[in-house]
Image 1 (cartoon, rainbow, N blue to C red):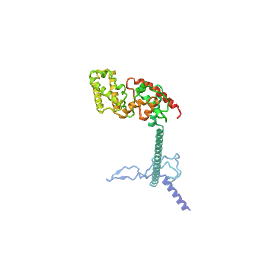
Image 2 (image 1 turned 90 degrees about the vertical axis):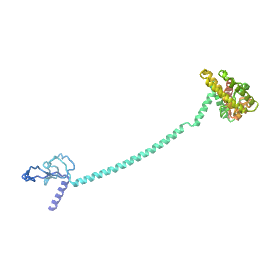
Image 3 (image 1 turned 60 degrees about the horizontal axis):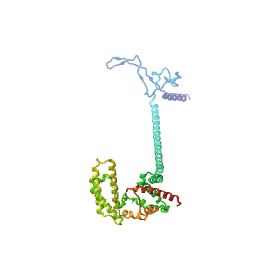
Image 4 (image 1 turned 180 degrees about the vertical axis):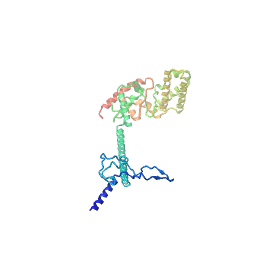
Length: 375
């Protein structure tokens, strides 16, 4: 039993010694000199042999010896065996276990960081999907709220109609814009010719110009036997030859239309050359003409080009005079536009402005009465 108790005591001391090691000084014999290689003596200092130093540890506040074993304090630090004031030293076995524990903890922290990064990346991916879905929903909402092309056209048509129903400027009436806005709304009715009976005078019918929708070609000057009201700027001497030849051929073409035939192609080519000649002479005199005179001459030449385009259109030439012979009321004019596809052109000839103004009020009353009747 005594031997067993002694062995347990020695094991406990060794365990404590491994856990709390301190440096063990080796005291040399001061009487033993150190001899050199030549036989002399060399002064020597105290040499100490320590175990490998791993870290530092502050001593315990209680610094009293609690009993020792072989010069070591088993219960704590002693005051007599600390040559360096509390330096903590580990032996290789304890350092190995400490290093393994540190590596294990670092490895666990590494994999924890890896998994946390994967979770963060997955959350970012999910948030990107949510962002993409919200972007698609926003675009769908914007497309549902944005006006389409047809919506813009319908808004413009409604705006033009409301403007034509009220008091539009005279320039819009004379250009045919207000008349066409009212006509388009009338043609949308299931029975566009079932409106009230509003008669038209022959003067108003002669002043109204119907043109093709595909171009600006018209024969609005096919009145009064094709006489043209030339502005003062085009009545100068240098314009005499092309102007007189054009007037003669134009009157001849109008006479042919009134008789039911078409103008000669040779005459149409000659009239185009005469217009180009007058245009060149007008540009040469731009420095000597006043702005008003130049604008008036230029507008007349442009209108004559549109007349030549109308004379070159056989269908327009055939319907030029026939519709005036058949039309007597506003409903008849609406029926002509419905069957031929024509619409109102601008007022070009002298006196057309008065006819357009009078016809506008009659057409507006017709449209108002037609829209008020049940369909």
